[in-house]
Image (tube, rainbow over all chains, first blue to last red; front, side, top):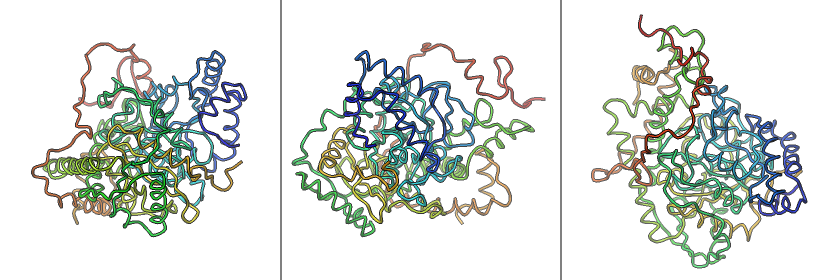
Length: 483
Length: 95
């Protein structure tokens, strides 16, 4: 089965060449064959899907459908889905049934999508390899002994293995872009505030953003357009007009000024550098002009991020007290014992490490030296980007410093954190950014990151679309997943 | 060592987590490597820089204090394993 994109599938559904049920069943067959091995799903949503299939088919029959009506998807398991388990990949929320839908889930439900499962992920979205899930690691379809990246590993794998055409994810410091790169799919994180955070389990509130995985930039544009709009329920939702990110997809990129950061390119292993350079050269062939830029403070981004993100994590995760929801320990001796044992039993190692680091950074006497200082670095990085965008339209560069690595390869947390060295700077600045497949190195996918100025999702999506009109890397499928 | 055993124990108390005697050294070592990396933020002169709390430099909006949807009280209470009528049950706090 070859998925020909949302637009053509919507046309086939409208023409009754295929029914919503048949489309769903085609993917269900693939899921039955592969999802267990890949461990990419946590929760079953078949009861919901059954209802959504009927609703979608009726809308199509009544000519009330939109592009996404009847399209199957999976949601990362940190988006609340009403009356369905929402675990966040944690023992803490193993039995948590969400009482309401996240806004982005509601928006996609309203568009008529069919929810086929909840996707596995690093616990509370903390990780770059999907090895931190309470429900076990997710495997990369390109090589089962390799990680898929994280934290949205299950979502990236589901799309890469052709188990669904689209998936939602979230990105705090690279959690959409890095797994998209490592699994060979297209993934976009919009501008901070574009997608509502209401109903998305919080990790680091000033960084968390919802986004999309798909087989192409075009499909990402369709999904993102239906997902994003101002939401009064999220106090950091950007007060901007709803936008159709697909309208500018046909534009030529002739004369487009593309910024390239020489320090980033020079720091890459030779094989990844060559592949990255080739993809940037393709943009030049399509008419773009390259301009060297520098981001003088970006080398401090990972350090600043690992103050800000854990600090916000320690605050956000203090809500898990064993009382109102989440894991509760057996026979607590007193209230403190209830808090401490419920949290100690419920959280995994990496989550506890980040809570501890964040608690330390926010503790008496350290606030100015760490959290406040890191926020100042954040402004410097944001200004670096603003200066760069005075000269260029977009920035192109690497997503990750390596291809998918072996399981258990990174035992030291800092070596894992450095996996996000190229994705964290734009996260701190709140910029829209995407990863698109640009080829294979050692038979494993490599991605190119495109970073746009604030609220310019449409521009980076169009650049990726123009690249994908002229190349076929985004269509590559891992051996064994064609059928 | 940037983080010693005693500090690990103190942080765990603040974070409402317990660390066993056998875990302390490993936690101290891993936190130490993280803090060593974090300390690079001191390389930049930020005296004249304003902290950035929100990447859009936006201030959090407040909404009007009005009822927006029906009460979900029963559904929310059902998420807890121990409730009594409208109350969450916790271990005795005051004798």
